[in-house]
Image (tube, rainbow, N blue to C red):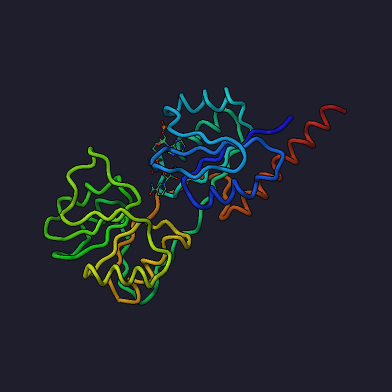
Length: 259
Ligand code: NAP
């Protein structure tokens, strides 16, 4: 019987993994939260959009759709989804893998400060700064009380109406540039002296950090939430190998039972 794999997405790694599994004899379900207006679609398999309805909804979904394997390739800060999925998989004894890129490392000789939370990041900003705030659209309000500062808020989607009040400054609807030169240009254009970012890791959003380092700007880096113990992969290739092993082990187990 063809196994069904649920991939929790919203990241480049999740899309790369789906594409690398396109020739596998598996039923793929690629799931996203539905935060973006034109989502990526896998070339094979199914796209599902929207939350599962918390723990209970998730357990029902996994059982009803007869999911065999779950690969959680959500962003390193998507903690609610990851926690819920880990709990649901543990309850149903489903194999679960967390696909997560390595975090960015703190350079030795650069003005880089780590913050444990968004609130701490807001408190750590020295007075009167001009800031590139690159944390997505959801949690901008955490910086609104810093009225002594000016914020360039960059996100690929506009914040919803309930994300209010916004910090003082300008909203920029844009993907992060992948080229440090473009980021350098943006930082100079807006006279930015501080960059605030989540420690997402990977190469896709690193250009702003490289540009900030080139200009000697202050960086406030929000650390990732701590990941509970589970099977992990650092890139799509490792995740694909994990899945191949799981499928092979299951096939061997089925053959033994048949004999
Ligand atoms: P979150 O706080 O962990 O999730 C909030 C809720 O959204 C979850 O409880 C779940 O709803 C739903 N959800 C999240 N990811 C989902 C998925 N892949 N498929 C179906 N439902 C999902 O996550 P978030 O930080 O809002 O991130 C939402 C999505 O954006 C994720 O797919 C993530 O990979 C992507 N993303 C996040 C960031 C970031 O900085 N957080 C950056 C880039 C991309 P129910 O409880 O109803 O199941």
